[in-house]
Image (cartoon, rainbow, N blue to C red; front, top):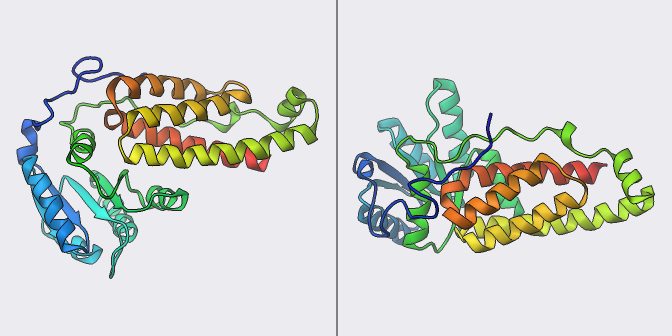
Length: 271
């Protein structure tokens, strides 16, 4: 399967004017889940301004009851809430979808903090994307342009990187001359990559194309230092695509590559 990434509606152009919304959004409804009434009011106002229908809930249990009553096209949920938090809500939504063989609904987390632990919890719960509070109208719109697309794929699926394509310990010892040198190199590299992964998550959450491309460039440089892998080729494509089109149009490919980079770091740590 091809891993090429292609722009939509022309290279580098915003698919719509900054104050416009896709026509099909008038038929879409978003479920907002947040325990702060003021934030629910603000999110509802933003979504209505974008031409989207909206329903709000104060916790995960209330959200599940709302989902029992009607389908939603997307869920925006706070991560930390009483009664049932956003992670538990996402896990239960995904369990129900598997049980009923339903099409997965996109889930976007709203969080005030985004460290490695929060990223791991989001991915483990089946959350598709995240935004850091306080978010801007433009950030919300750009993310929704991706996750509420009209069905036309914006990014082709990327096959998961295979571990057999990664360097073996024997190969790296040969490359660096001794096991002692290799172990010191790997310890330093793993620490550096972890810091860059956290910075990449922050840039992606803020839909910051320049910072996303910059941290991805650093990560791919670290990967290439140990010899070429398919991760490097994917990263180079994404750096070009994000610089050209922005973060939102390539969110799914970015999240997939980030997950594989996390796996790669754990692999190197265990060598």
